Image (spheres, rainbow, N blue to C red):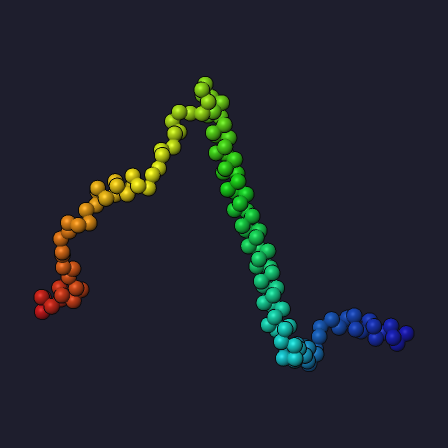
Length: 131
């Protein structure tokens, strides 16, 4: 019967004493000094693993959104192809692109051999005239 009373007393007293809390805190600090992996390595590894899982989840969402956009564009193209009698719309004809032609057009617009020297005023030059 005395054992039963002690068990009931322990069940009623759920609050830990301050001395017990301080000793557990000191023991935790000792573990950090004795086993540095628990203090530095485990949080670093867990942060790395959980961060990569979280980033993978975020990236997957972005991929799903881009896939939906591509699907919508494909459906639009298929619907325009179905609506036209001759096949795809005639409005979409990609222009043939040539780097040499683009270079010639750019060289015609900009003349790098005829230029004029202009002096750029220094910031303190305007202040010297006012003094």
